[in-house]
Image 1 (tube, rainbow, N blue to C red):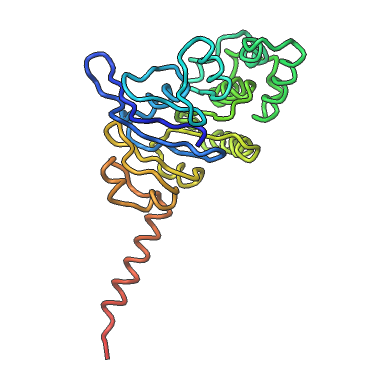
Image 2 (tube, one colour):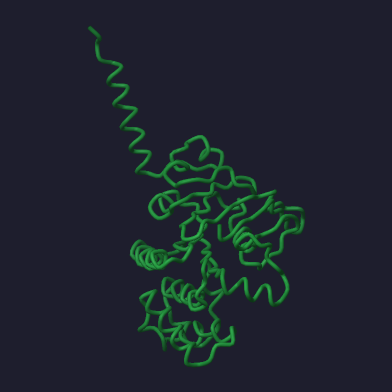
Length: 263
């Protein structure tokens, strides 16, 4: 396991419990969908997995070693575990795309030559090389999403955490983004993404962690978890459309068989 959350608990001011003894493992090279309704603690988990938030109880482990919250520990952690927020405007602040994507590598202490290489690679991986000199405020929402991911990718993380990666995108924009993320996955990057979209989890994830009440209600292969109607119902979710159609077809076939007269 590249990442592990052990008994994480975290409450926001006012006593709102976001994580309640949550346990989760992230396998290296996997695509893990963290699935649940709004307010289930999904985003809070991601902020713990890259050290932005410190648990009030429990711990996060990297390769089996408890993560450190010192300046040096956090810097090393974030080299390995990148985070892309749901709203790209929360991450983009430089004047141009190239300047924004270069911020992370320069902050790592890399020289200009290595930084330029990383920026070019990241922009190419997201299919936005032609936007390098574009002003960030002139980008579409979908372009901003890809630039934010490129900024994280330029750090060459082992794990990329993405909060609702396709939220706000139209069909074509979501398709292009998922294709780019699929290429990153094939190259060996571990992907962890939050969503409340069961169809996205079905189409893109290897594994699903189903959230309910700040805990993982079920975690396993996507096909198994997403076929568990009872587990999904506890989180206010229904099976993916393709699975639901399959269930209904099978139920109708069984009903028809049972109605047939027997000799």
